[in-house]
Image 1 (spheres, rainbow, N blue to C red):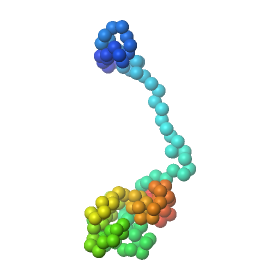
Image 2 (cartoon, rainbow, N blue to C red; image 1 turned 90 degrees about the vertical axis):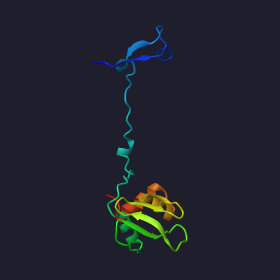
Image 3 (cartoon, rainbow, N blue to C red; image 1 turned 120 degrees about the vertical axis):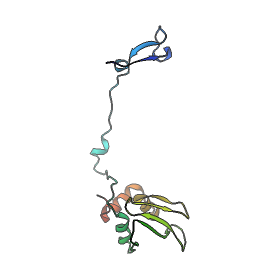
Length: 130
């Protein structure tokens, strides 16, 4: 069965008001897909392994405490109390002091001052991405 809808005259520029039209034939347009990213050799997918934060901190010589949720002093601002919460299973972080938050790639970007693409290359070299 076809789906019909009533459309105002301004949309179709027809003489009859509220003309019933077949939307499958009237609004049929070719769908355009952009698959350039699939053929780009520089394309790196952000798909971190579980525990990628632990592996990244281990590469810096820092051992994170055990547990799913880890609280440590924030490295983005000078603070002695633990305010940086890291979810090691979901690879997310949030600082309650400076409100810095995001995923592991954002962490690397903020810590090292690099672009997203450069952060992904760093994580790929450390083995933090699948």
